[in-house]
Image 1 (tube, protein in one colour):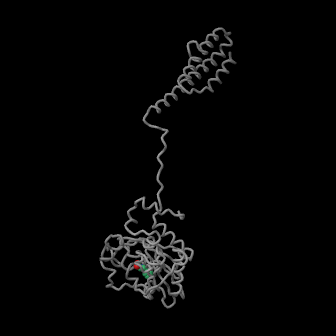
Image 2 (cartoon, rainbow, N blue to C red):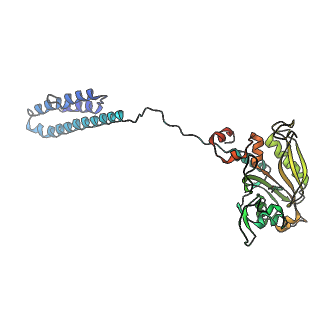
Image 3 (cartoon, protein in one colour):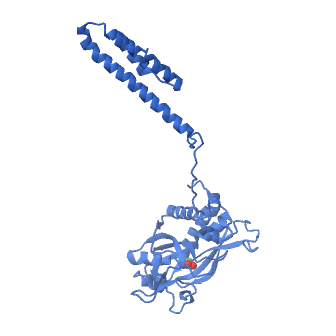
Length: 344
Ligand code: PHE
């Protein structure tokens, strides 16, 4: 009898029912009124009193085990049935989640930073809310300079220790902060968002992004500036891109220039984008005015330097031929998805 029970125990342990019929025949076979357990209890009556003491416990445990197994199988069958009947269709394919995309301005900013990093430039950052000193006065803007007008600058507060508080109009303010805080040589670029009070249109926005650069050391010349920017353009727009410098004016540089590159869209032949001139302007630059150096406590007899500044939107327009600036701030995923790059 003991042997039989052991055999049945392993049979029950291994039993798995695929459906209600199989489970029912399991019940009849073991737990039914004419089932195995009933028979075993019948046989139990005939064994000796001594054997009963041992077998009684074994038999009871066996019965409980068979019942528990039946109960567990029954419950799992029922729960499967329940989920099959519910409205949830677990066989439907899952909903995929959409991957985002890098903003084209971020891609271009990253590319610009990489190029200058290889030339030994650090990345410097500063506040977007600036005082008059860092945004204008230290940069040699005369008191009555039109760029300080309400038209160009978003003023926040009048007065203050270092003049009116405003949203920075360029990241040259970071150059001032850097020169004030350290000692030359300086070699850094300043990427960041800047604000100008302009009506929003396809060609102008009230905020945009810049990368400015500053290099101050002994014996820095305009030739260094030209060579650095020439190299930068070859890296960003490809070998063979031509550059030209036109004299210009900025309060903080002397001499000053604007740099054009041969139109990357028509390769200099002439198109709508370059207004059929074959050239497009991409940045302003020049030798840092000695007044600016002195304002930042740098000896202008000993040190010279150059600075440059470009708009990331303008460069991105050229690289990707995006004609409407407003697209950059609308965050339409269909627009953003078009600029996946190997730099991700
Ligand atoms: N700060 C200038 C601008 O915002 C750009 C510039 C930077 C020009 C450095 C010359 C030198 O337009």
